[in-house]
Image (cartoon, rainbow, N blue to C red):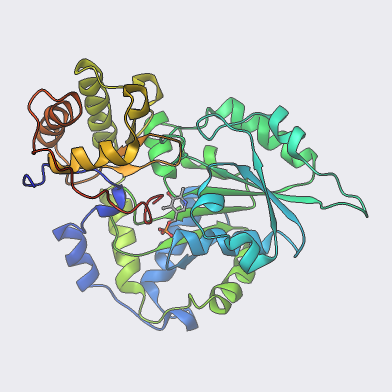
Length: 366
Ligand SMILES: *Cc1c(COP(=O)(O)O)cnc(C)c1O
C-alpha cells in the first residue's frame, strides 16, 4: 500500500488544534448535571443566541440531540417525516422507532432537498383510523445529498407548508455552519423557525466531542430530563464546552477553506475525466459517481485506497464521498486528484493485480 496521501472519508477526522487543546486544558469546570459548570453554561447561551433560540443544551453527540428532539416533538405511534436519505433515517439505527416509538415516512428528495408538494404527498392527516404525521426533520446541509445547502426560499416554503399542517419542526443542523458560511446568511435565518435545532461540534468545527440541542426554554428544559434519561448527562463537561467555544471563535470562518478545497477537488477530478458533478458541490462534500465509469463503489474505493486516497461509500448506489476539513491542504488536494486519476483511469496503476479488501461500509454516514 502506498503511503496515505489524503484521508477524505469524513470531516469527523478533524484533529483538535493546539489552540483548542490549550483552551480545553484551562477550562473552568463544575458539575454539569447540577448546571454548575460555567463553561457549559456559556457555550449553551452562545449557541442559543447564534441560532436565534431561547436556550440550548450540550449533549454528547448530534445523534443524541436528534433523538431527544424527535422524542420531544412526538408521541409513540406518531410518524416522523424526513428525506429518505437523511441521517435520522439512515444512520441512527432506527432510533426514532427504538427511542420514541415512531414510524418513519421517507420523503422523495433530490440531493436531500424536497418541496412542499413532496411534503403534502407524504403527509398523513390526523384521523382516528390511520397513523398521523407529527414531526418533520430537515437536514441542512444534507450529507447524503452531497453537502447541499437548502435554498432559503424553498426552505421557507416547505416550513410554511409544514406549519400549516401542524407539524413539529426539527432541524438536523449537524453541518449548519457550512450552510451559513457558504451562503453568508446569518445562522438565525436558517435556524430560528424550527422548534428544535441540532448543532454539531465534531464535524468541520473540529471538536473531539459534543453537540447541542437548541429550542424554546420549556422544550430545552424537557430536553435536559431526556438527556439524563438517555444517559447523556455529564459532569465536568466544561473541558468539552471549552473546545466548542474555541471552535465558535476560531473555526467557523475557516470552513470557507474547506469549501474552496472541495471546489478544487471537484474541478480537478472533472479535468482528469472523472465522474463528478461540479454544480452539485455547495460545501465540503464531493461525490464521485464511479458507477458512470462502470465501476462498483467497493472496487473503486479499494483502488483509491491502494493509491493512498481514502474515501467513504455514499448511500446512493456506486458513489464515493470525499469530505474536506481542517488539516487537508490545497497541496493534499492536488496530490489526491493525481492519485485518483492514477487509481481509476489506470494511467499509472498504484498496485499490482490484487486489489486490497474493501473497507467495511459500516461506519459511514458521519
Ligand atoms: C454526523 C451527523 C449526525 C450525528 O452526529 P454524531 O455527533 O456523530 O452523533 C447527525 N446528522 C448529520 C447530518 C450528521 O452529519
